[in-house]
Image 1 (cartoon, rainbow, N blue to C red):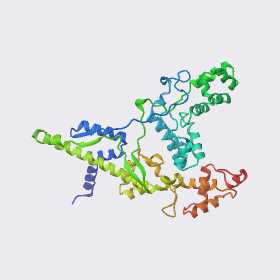
Image 2 (spheres, helix red, strand yellow):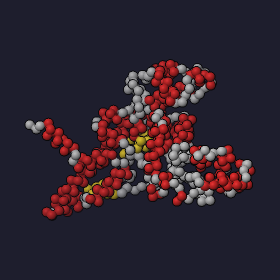
Image 3 (cartoon, helix red, strand yellow):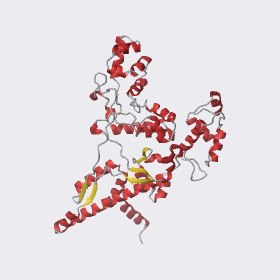
Image 4 (spheres, helix red, strand yellow):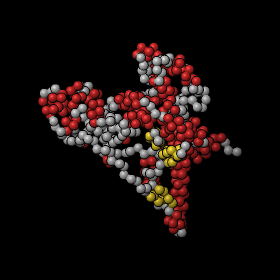
Length: 439
């Protein structure tokens, strides 16, 4: 009989084989990383054939009415801050600022969602009201978050116009005075070099106007600008689309080359004794790689399916219907080990009818529940906001809000309701009654 120690050593040895290590690494790779890894493997294995997939060029962004590339007004590309040139690093830095600045899960989700909707200039690709509707929240809620985001470092990201972008940069420098605000509202006159009209509008002398123009030239009209050679767009790993009353889930392979085994070359190598051993080894490695690829795809599909089934309400209604969910629960649903689920979920994105989201956003914090249909902390905050926004003349106390949530099946205490209400920035019932009504 083998000793427990020997069994343990054998188990550890099996767990650390190069093939298993390769499979584990492939689970963690993003599409871009996996594509690069496959090309490296093809260079080392003559039996692997890679066929690049056809991909269409992305649409060009619409032109800005005001020429913010005019060297007469702004710094040249060479003079722009180095930090703004590194797209992927900048995006991750902003994501980290969002996580640190918004401990509230609802606000953090909104912030990260807005981050995924920035173009290469750092501006929003859609209007705030459209994005709010996509998330299933009020525009005012999204706008509150967006205004804070515009003053992150670098300032001016998340703007919807050039005026707003430059205003945010001046505001953080404490230089957005009334005259400067008027100047920014008339950028068309600035582009046309209507100096006299600008002096009249701003009530300025010529020297003062020149000083203000110098300040504007020092600003960055595209704080998120990334050189074409370094631009890396987020590519979703999973695509979810409506299919009748349900959803169709597929793994996105647009960036991945097609991988095949060159059986003809393998047969040719096998005919001679000198190359037979190499052909066997290359064939085994190629076959394992193909199996690992298929296993990764099926695991990703299982995880995406589990998320869609659990967070079906979010896809239909938005944040207000987000349910509590943990990696352990998803592991139980899919039959995968929790560590495997964690590896796959990390740094992966899902393209849904509501937008592109990191998979980890589908695992919000949870309260104790009375049943499996209870809401997450994020959703409960949205319910509280909804109740208060529609309370009318009958101002709802925290006790009343607690009773309403409990009637919906959520086990929650009054003090928790009060904490969530305060986190939303909503006054208590006494103050709301004095103010008349606060959304």
